[in-house]
Structure formats: C-alpha cells, structure tokens
Length: 501
Image (cartoon, rainbow, N blue to C red; front, top):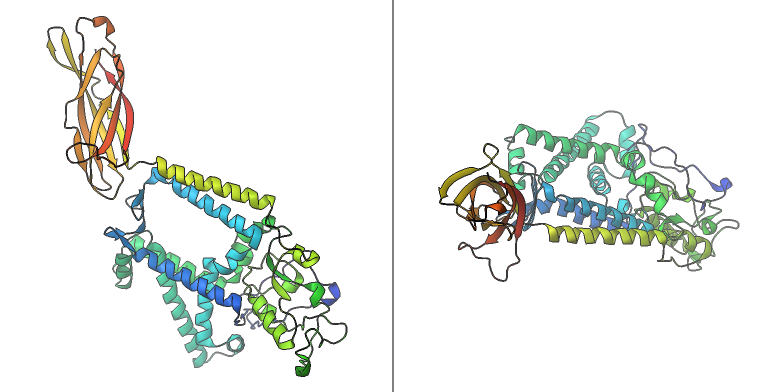
C-alpha cells in the first residue's frame, strides 16, 4: 500500500495547532503502509457485509430459472434476462431508471450517514479487505509485514511473496470469471477458462478483469479511494451539520498526550488523567488501523471512508484507561458542538427522496408499458400494388408487406395478425395469408403477407382513394387463435399505407 499524500481538513472540528502531531504509521522502507488489524463492533459488521456481498457476487450467475441462467446480460443475442423478464436494447430505458434510482438512493443515504457506502458496501473495499486478509495469513501481522518489506532478499521472503501473489492471482482470476459470468453462461465459462479451451475474446475479457482486480485490490488499494474514486470528491457537498460521519471529539480529547494506566483508578471514569490533558492518550491506533492512512483527529477529510476502524480502536483504548467510549464515533457536527440530536428533516434529503420516488415511479411505468411483442411493418418497395382480377365493376387490389414480429418472452407463443381501417372507407380489406403464427422464444419471425381490397359498392366510384392507412395488430392468442380469457391482453400495432390505382 503506497503512502498517501497529506490530506487537508475540510471541517472546523479541529484540535488546536499546538496539539497536532505527525501520525506514526507502519510504513516500510518502500513507502508501503501496512494497516494494523482491528476487531470490534463495526469491523465485525464490515466483515459480515463484505463476505455476504462477495458470496452474492459469485453465486448469482449460478441461479437457474426455467432452464436458463436467471440473470444474464447476453451481449451476443442483445438480451438481458432477469428471471422471467427479458429486456431488449429498446427496453434498456428501464436499466437507466434503475441506475439513476440507485444513484439517488446513495445520495439520500449520504445525507444521513456520510460515506458509509465506501466503508461497508463498496466492492473496492470488500476485495481490498479480502486481499489484505490473505496477506496477513501468509506474511503475518502488520509488524511482521513491515519487517519483511525491510528485510533483505532471502528464500523465506521469496517463498512468502510467491505464495501471496499466487493466492492473489487465483482470487483475481475467479473474480474475472465471476464478473464475466453475468455476460455469458457461467458454468460453461468457468469450465472453459480453467480447461484453457475458451475463445480468444472470452479469455481476453476474463484476464483483463482479473488483472484489474489484482492491481486494484493488491497494489493500489487506498490510492483508488484517494485519487481515482469520483464519489470521494463530490460526496462532501451532500453533507450538512446533521450528517453522521466518523468524527473526533476535540473538545473532550485535547490536549492529547501519552500516559500510564492507573489500574487502581480505572473504576473512576475520567478521574485518572494527568492535569491539563484530555481523554486522547495519543496512542496513534486510530491512524494505524485506518485503511487510507489518515489521522481522523485532524478533522473531517474526504479520504475517510467511514469504515469505523478508528472507532473500534479508540473505544478499546478508552475501555483500558477507564474513560467514556466514543471519543471517536459516528456523530454529527451539531451533536458535537451543540449536543443536539440529528434532525431527519433536510432540504437535501427531501430533494433526493423526491427524485428517488420519481425514478421508482418511472421504473414501474416503464415496466408496465413494455410489451412482450415487437412489430415492424415493411411495405414491398418493388411494387406499390397489383390488380389481380376484375369482376364486372368490382376491382381487387393487392399490397404486399413484410412483418417482422419478435417474441420477447422466454416461451414460444401463438400470435394473431389482424388489420384495422377507417369504417367510412369505400373498400373492404382482408389478409390473404394465415393469420395465426407460432414464434419461438426470443425469435424474430419475418412473415410476408398480402392484403387485398375490394370496393364495397362498385357503383360508387367517386369514393375511390389512391391510398389509405391500415393498422396492423399483433395479439398473443392460444393455438386456436382465441385470446386467452383472464390473461392480460398483449398487443402491439403499427400503421402502414395501402396503395391502389
């Protein structure tokens, strides 16, 4: 882990300049930060949520539904399967609404809990924690890792490094397969990759995402949060005085300074401090356990990911010295300065909540308006019309059309073709072909049809028009051509021109 640049405070909750100190962190000769392992309430929550999210990430592609992968972005066929819903490119506005809803949900949570997404739910954080766990198992705790970095090259050092990077590479490869498993059948993908029988582009994409995972979680780590993540740059504009973030109580902690524990006075809370010192014992554990290497005692900083590691470390120290907990805690500026409870009424929160509701409504409306049938009507460009027969004063004209009907569902279905026209027209129209067709799941059927017209009253030639508008209707039916009773009507329509002499 590279040593981060010194961060600038963005809050007024700062200790006095005379009490600020340069933090002591476990930095090797190469400048790599080795984060101290920490246990506690928030770290237990982080571990559980990270484990759950990683398990969900890998397991979802293996869920089957109706004989196929339940969730699959099939790029080749341009389809997105989500259980019994199939979305095509023209339906992807639904996904756009989903992403916008997720963004506003994140903004809404940020107003109340700050950058809690980064600390507990972000994939970068989860994979980094997993890589650091592997590193600790192979090379030891933060002291051992620092010593190993500074030690000269030896067989023991080479063996540990090879073991660590091999484990990282395996996890990264599995991650690449896990990600691509959302875009191609997962079971076949894993089999092809590990049997070295995958296609060229499949292998390229898997190894590309494996390399990204290896570099991000193994080498860049906190640099992604400090320099690459856009959320860290603009999330502060969503904060207000009631936003709960990891904060240091400078009024209680300063002046900070080291001291010895007096075991006889541990039961006397806040009565075993040397004169002129606050509760902060300047142990630097809050810095040692920070994944981004910052000192939270310098005030609110954009690099803080709200993981709560410093809260757990400080509370353990306060317990050892017999002081009150939560010298560092999840709290708001108003709570620190004025002792006020956070207010849940905020213009920002209401604005984000309103936008979120709008996005959710748009998702529902978009899903309700989508149809399982797609119809395109293309006229025969070679010939506008054909006169096929003349009986007395009755004239029969034909127009040819090509219907492109797509069944967007995951089951084969029967569809009925019908036409509609102006009842005041002087002509009758009819379809010369079979009007019921069977279309397989996700199939686009190109079905040529012929529409004929004949005059209702041959003696009324004055009503003749050279062109009229027909509307083609495609309706899902049963095998007998009848609409299934009790089933919602699934129908689409498109208009086209009919030409005659």
